[in-house]
Length: 106
Image (tube, rainbow, N blue to C red; front, top):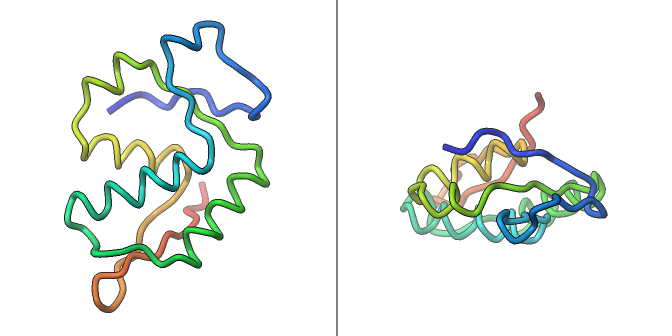
């Protein structure tokens, strides 16, 4: 799993942007939604919790960067784990295998 990349304000950019993938709030939420379902952990994600997560990340000016070569070398499970860790998010499985995304305090 990638080490924790830098979390930066959205206005910041790494010097080697072409060698890094920038994850902004919408991409983080979309990635978590995709991987939770793709990995068979949930059949769907609660829309209200995903919207609350997106709002939190936008409000915090969230952006994370990971080296492209590292991202391409890890498994889908490792990608999900990284997305959850870097965004301080944890899924909670509810009735009907609907996942709720919750903020995980540090």
